[in-house]
Length: 197
Length: 195
Image 1 (cartoon, rainbow over the protein chains, first blue to last red):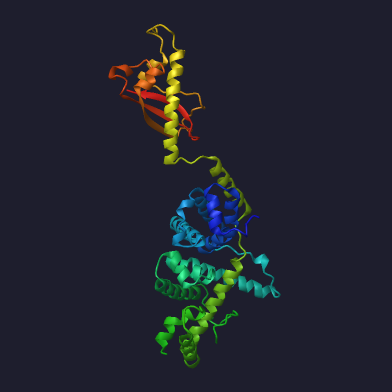
Image 2: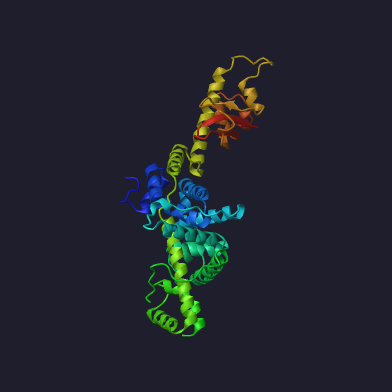
């Protein structure tokens, strides 16, 4: 009931425009988590992520007419509003030390390995937060949110080629910053990613 | 494939939609032969794995429950608060014109039959002085008032309802102006006639 799985985003928006509170709740249940995680990954701060999420959905509730379905999906629209809100916050405030993550959700057979992994992830996040925002947002969208180049370009209002080159450069910078943060770092693949090799 | 070309597309190798099969195979074959590009590929994979780990660690992050409560409250508030739109303003102005006529009629009956004493401030005097007359449809407060609408009323209509102003001087054909104060609910709070 809360997410109203039978209704499309467009249906819910129509109902929201006529002041339907359950429709507003359903849209938030559907998309609030994604907006929150994007803001969290961009800012490294749960408090900023919460504020941004609230601003994004308040804007949707109070001025739903701002969304134009002809220009893209509702999710893209909300990401766009979230992105602008995060960037405004980042301009105003200092960067944050990244949040520690929800380590309790992961169970490591080897506690030491788990600790090392969390440390490494914390390092990656610090390096990510040190990137200039236009590189950071592309890395977050393409690598953490798993958007395609085209989806990211649509959301950012730029060309696919721009996304591609920013991601390339952003990853280079990320590698350099990680090296600076951890000079002993090696480049040996640790993950299970398959690149058809 | 040359090393420069490989380095230009190494980021795309992790994205199935970014490269065609032939280019991907060529790049991987080059990395298998070239130690330098093999290291570049290994570094790119390592970074992707770490980013994937970061994505996984933050994938379960959810906004606090209080946020949903706050947004639901905002949605409820929006539903209960009428939105001021031009069509509503127009409708309100029309309704208020009628209200003004009724108010003028009420004032005529409230006045003493004879000429008012000079010291008594009658409602008519007040309107001519430009004061607002509360209409009694609701409590007026500064924070409540959202709009002042100026309307025009035929003087002849006011005369017919007992308006004791100068409406007759123009044969009753001229229009009198009135300012009507609207509250947040669109209901008139007060009216004044403008000379």
